[in-house]
Amino acid sequence: MRLLFAADLHYSLKQFDWLLAQAPDFGAVIIGGDLLDLSSALDADVQIAIVEKYLDLIRQKTMLVVCSGNHDGDCRNEADESIARWVRAARHEGLHVDGDSFFIGETLVSVCPWWDGELTRSLIERQLEQDAAKDKSRWIWIHHAPPLGARTCWTGRKFIGDEHLLGWIERFQPGMVFSGHIHNSPFYPEGSWIDRLGGTWVFNPGRQIGPQPATIILDLDEMTAEWSSLEGHSVRSLRIAEG
Image 1 (tube, rainbow, N blue to C red):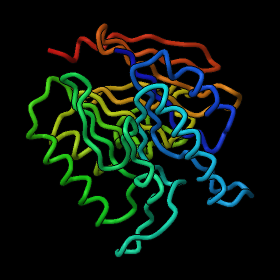
Image 2 (image 1 turned 120 degrees about the horizontal axis):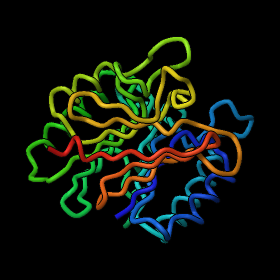
Image 3 (image 1 turned 180 degrees about the vertical axis):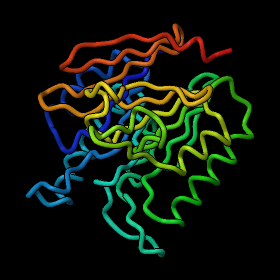
């Protein structure tokens, strides 16, 4: 099975159109957060209404997986933390969202929400603790921010990653973690679209302008990852981490 991953669309409707057109060719489409654009003059509620229509169309073509990012919050929880309630409300048959864990064959996928405080962070940790106990051949996480310590979090001037995610990776050792958030990381020599932390592959496709988003295609049968962007494409075998 092939999975198509993109992140940081930031309400680029042409890129949503592109994902919709590609969806039938993949076993799943995964969007790693920041579907909306807080800097836009267009009201967030209007953006949400349009994006929800795209999500419904894509899930009718193939399985869809969506985690929230820092641009996607539409309300506050009881701890006054920003959360994307609309993302959770979009959950539907064929559409997995924040807090979901599900299997693709024997591969377990954990979908983590954006967090900006202790309450949401504790919910992610509890989810990962529960998922760690499940019988699985491979474990994939979807988490908007990349982990600290990886080349996938290079901004062009410094590394900005999630130290808690790094701690969870070291503790639970998933096979792969797909993120976004740091838009330019793959386009700098010091950065990358792919890195390895211990036995865990970490990915960040980056963000680009134009009608096609930067993407990563994960082939679960061949165990390869292919990055495509305006700068070209690159293919890496992931089998060295399987043993």
